[in-house]
Length: 99
Image 1 (cartoon, helix red, strand yellow):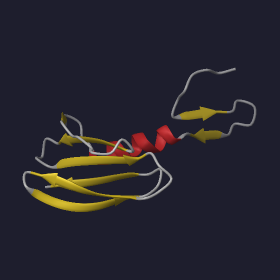
Image 2 (image 1 turned 120 degrees about the vertical axis):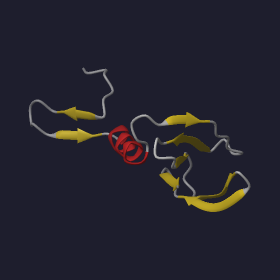
Image 3 (image 1 turned 90 degrees about the vertical axis):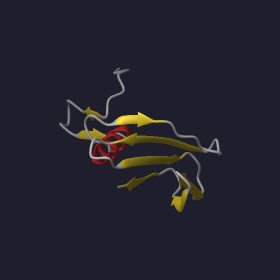
Image 4 (image 1 turned 45 degrees about the vertical axis):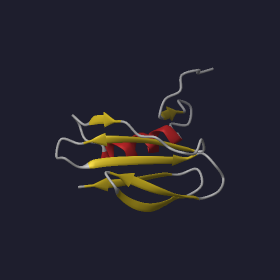
């Protein structure tokens, strides 16, 4: 048995590659969060929504929200007095990039 959790698993018998959710999460994060980015503080008013944000070296802010539930979640994103509404689909990740 393999107890290692990796983003990609290989079946050595069939040669098949299996891509886990972590593979897609990492790809999503790396698309918007650039090398050298600094993590900044976030807070979510719901325990069902996980958030993180990074300030990229080009000055853009990448805000990532993950919905842990089976229902879509609508929420407000408030940054420096500016408010935007976003909807995060069930068991999905949504990213907003502000320039």
